[in-house]
Amino acid sequence: MPEQEPNLDVGLDIRDPRTAVLSVGGELDMETATRLEERMTEQLDLGRRHLVLDLAALDFMDSSGLNVLIRVLHRARETGGDLHLAAPTPAVRRILEITGVTTALPPYEGVAEALVAAGAGR
Image 1 (tube, one colour):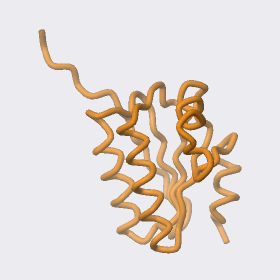
Image 2 (cartoon, helix red, strand yellow):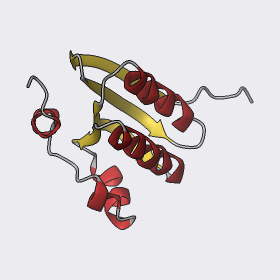
Image 3 (cartoon, one colour):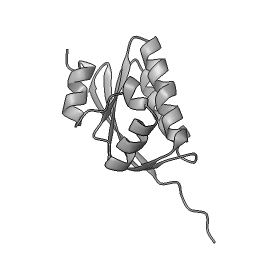
């Protein structure tokens, strides 16, 4: 049986010099979490302190994905920025709620609301 390619798509939209929107689709799990963490860390390294994750196309997330979100959240806040979650699917929202991650990372209904919270364009 051939090895299956990890199913995670990450799109990037630079909104201003300090804000990036990363659109995440597919499955965020042990096989794909590192790829997302690298993309988010790259944006922080480039000076984009406010990251918005558009989760509208994310079908699945496990504890590896949660760990990445928490690590990047801490790193962003250490540099004076933040991480904002937008439009999580019902399955992903449930994981965020059950684990209590929504206390530190309240999800927004859409990217526009998350961008307002991030202060994009100011």
